[in-house]
Structure formats: structure tokens, C-alpha cells
Image (cartoon, one colour):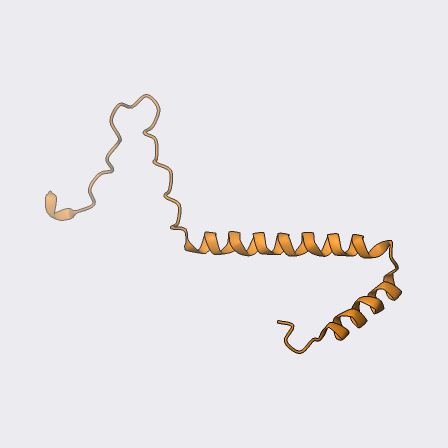
Length: 81
């Protein structure tokens, strides 16, 4: 990831950040960046888990109240008559 960056490049980058934001703000920025990266990773893991999970089964339907047997709809097949 940092193949083209030497130690001099990284130190120069950190000095520029220190000059731009100041010593008080750098820990706050680093903490916020770390939390953002963690939340992003968690979201990506949840998305991958959701995509690989089988679809949920529909809940079983309950029979109508007061009936011990489920009602059977009348047949629309004309050949049975």
C-alpha cells in the first residue's frame, strides 16, 4: 500500500498535517477517522453476511378463531361434478 512512500515522505506529510490542524486537533481527527473506518468495516461485514444468508421463511398462518379445522376453499374444477 505504501510502496512508493519513504520515511521522508511520511514525515513530511505528518508535519504538514500538524501545521494545518495544530497539535490539539490531530488526536480528535485521528479518533474520528478510526471510528469511521471501524463503522465502515462493520457495515461491509453486515452486508456480506446478509447477502450470503438464506431468505427468511414466512411465518406460518394461524387458523381462523373458533375453528378447529382450517377451511378448504371450494374446488373450481368442473370435471369433479
